[in-house]
Amino acid sequence: MEPSDGLEVGADDEPFSVRLERWLSGEGAKTIGDLGEVFAEKSFAVTVLFLMFLPALPLPTGGISHVFEAITVVVAGQMVLGRRTLWLPERWRRRELGSAMIDKAVPFIARRIGWFERFSRPRGVQLFRRRLPLSLVGLVIVVFAVAAALSPPFSGLDTIPSMGAVVVALSIILEDVVVLGIGVAIGVGGVALSIALGAAAVRLVSDVF
Image 1 (tube, rainbow, N blue to C red):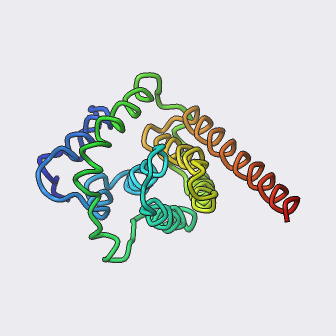
Image 2: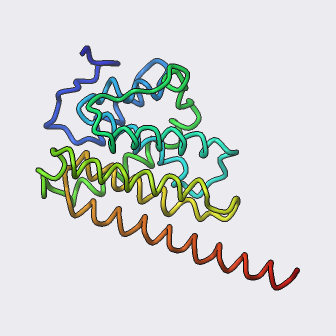
Image 3: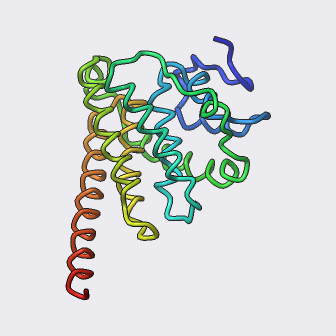
């Protein structure tokens, strides 16, 4: 596979954040399909990370986050099924990440990933190289993406399970089981909070009416 925008795909000695920032800062349109092609060895995780980073930001997204969450479910579902290559409908593959999003998100994403890279090291590597554990990790991402999509609108509760999905995806890239544990804890906390507040809202409405 030919590198894109001067990126050396096989440059494993470079931090992932550096590779990602170089690609995003390069010339040309950046599409969701490009994520799978440029980062082939970690295509599922990189795609999930980038798709869920937008819902994880405490910013109004105008509903675009639900599109990204739906695509994330499809991507993570393929992980559950044990696919080795990422498949997406052509219409989704051609969807551009958007220059405005890239310009604003690149420094933020790189800083957050860089923080994890400074404290992370390969731990439990075999967990990320076997089909069954990766399928279970994919299932966790599906749950977090669905929870984010079902969170009450304008509540901001979708940000926590979304961040959990981002950190879980990053753990696959860094092959660090400790980062995986952090991501699962964040996501589960977000799901529990959404359920608790949702139940409280239902009780409040029922008491009023």
